[in-house]
Image 1 (cartoon, rainbow, N blue to C red):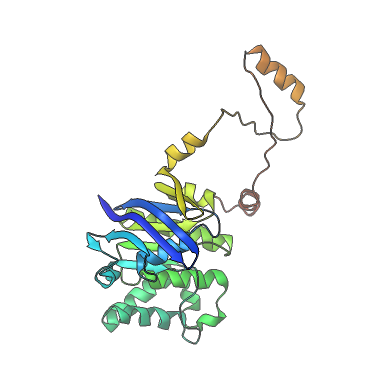
Image 2 (image 1 turned 180 degrees about the horizontal axis):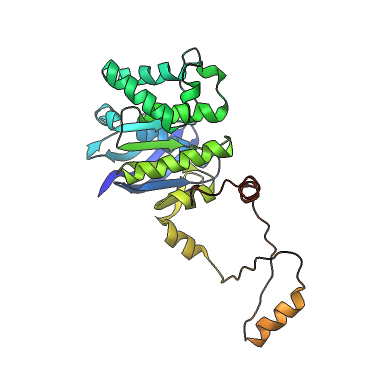
Length: 281
């Protein structure tokens, strides 16, 4: 069942069309990726979905409600993590969370309990009483996510949740998103990190220059994009390719090209620091 339905959504700024007649849906309990390069229209779309920008044209239905005409009726079920920090520098992490909870009408005892719970989940307990301005970028991002989750929303929107933060914080956020999905929450993330989307998302839509160019289940998108079969050899040291090519030829396998692929920096880091165990995969 769809919790979000978007039909023919368009957003224009003067002569610029940031989002051009796009349609997609998000099913309850899934992680939906909205993927594309910087400037493709991801953030603009997200702003329209959460009521921070008004569409030029089109329809947004959230949980059965027309969110263009009655956005306030659905804001209580949403948690929003924008691409910028929106918490108060002079307040501590704990105070920021309690303040956000108060905005949703949570009683004091309940909001303080919930704040401590989220601080613990995001490894921020030790920094709970420190001013927000003293937090690192990764810590700020985690507290911003905690603030969006304070009222236990069933629909969560995250704009570039791990961009520009340290690897440890990014991995913790990914694990949290997976747990939220297991609890039945629905999550939409915008990102240009395709590896992250592959790890997290059930379905995705690709947006380029304001238009959705492809969408579907993540596994099918990957399968459809594979133009050729590949064989991956994991080597420990150098290897002469001539004997390998001769072997394939003897088996009747035509080799059209050879490409050397080196490990990503993240793979190297995880191996060197021995932090792969208990990770995301």
